[in-house]
Length: 74
Image (cartoon, rainbow, N blue to C red; front, side, top):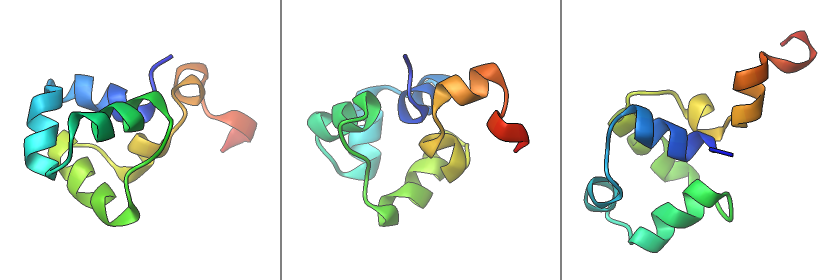
């Protein structure tokens, strides 16, 4: 299953290398974000969302919720 971080990167057609360079992080950090083992610090989220051309909510969303429509009518 894709999480919001990986889906946003793929939709923006960015490589892991581009994310690493732009954000000043290691490939391991990007991997951890995209596999759900951890999330970037709150201070990194706006910059990452801007780079991907999405919202912070998009990054943090569970992709199964987006695929199945919003849960609980929200």
